[in-house]
Image (tube, rainbow, N blue to C red; front, side):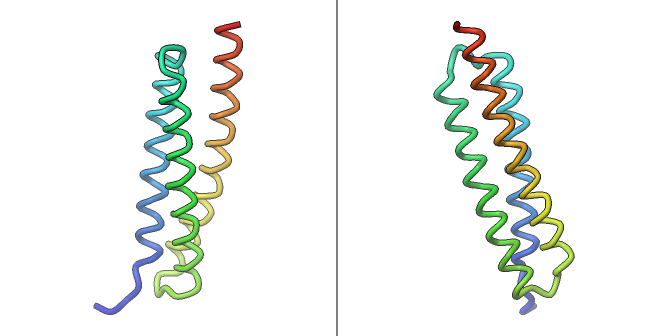
Length: 100
């Protein structure tokens, strides 16, 4: 019962961040021109959640018994963080092309 669960919580945060990016992508492509501030706030929230997941994964690699899950969480967190950067660039390009 005394095992560390940093890797499990990091994986949960990464999954939550990924789901948030899917929701943000859908909202930005359909209603993005109506509420650009909300989309930017969702992207920033996704960044914060994924950075928290990456930090927990690093701590999990150092301290955890379940190192495999922590390593998977770290790799997925970095990939989804890059995906979030691409999503924010895509949204800003889409918004500037749409609004002129």
